[in-house]
Length: 379
Image 1 (cartoon, helix red, strand yellow):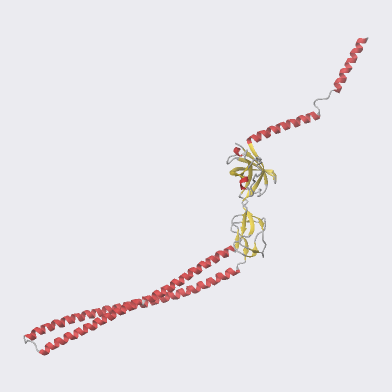
Image 2 (cartoon, rainbow, N blue to C red):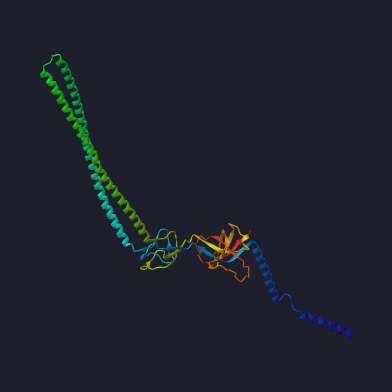
């Protein structure tokens, strides 16, 4: 009777022990196991990603910010753009009062017209004077030729008269000619000699007239000098006009590129000075990412490495780019204020080098200054 009762008591004790033992696959345990598994997978992915990529979390979108300033002083009479406007190259952005310089250009143009009229008058006078002088030189040349021919004729007559007189002298010695005939021959020689002398004087006078006519060419040279002075004055005024036209062009402030207006610094009616900033703009098609990469990671980068870009402003968008330039100096070398160490205590700080990332952004979503995160393929 005692043995069965003992068996019954033992069975009841085992059931109670099983009932009080905690279950293994509870919701809490399953959740903890799931979290542990996910954490393990994430850590594994994290280590693998860190082995194959370089991550940068503080990069920014950058662009060439162009500051447009005035080259001349003056009051702004027109301001054609506002912030956010898209503009084209050579488009007028602002205009400075140009009334005074236009009046100066008109005055120079009037002086040029006067000089042109004076130049025409002097050219006509030069042509007329030159024709007169050349005509006079030709006439005096013809006169000289005629007197020289007459002189030669007189010389021939003198030679003939001398020859006749010599014959008459021979005949007179032989009593073969009358004294009256000899006297006529002698008178003829004297007459032809006087004629020769007169012709010779006429030749000298004709030569002097030719020299005088040629000397009149100096009058033409004087007129030519006046023409040179007028042309020189025209060139001087033309240079002054060109300078004024250049200044007039400076009164129109234009854009050097196709871009977008980022900020304006003046309003219509304000007076500006040379070098004063008027507008700031940039080309939205020429943007890139400027990233500062740790010096310990720079060895993993190379040119043209692929880059995955995540932008805070567009969390649902993924952008791609490539490494375009790797800096050759640490950013600390460009600090305006150096960091001396007068105490002698040295603290090693990891330096950073600037890396330029080109962006593939055909829609133009990225703007200068936006924060981005980079995942760069490592080598």
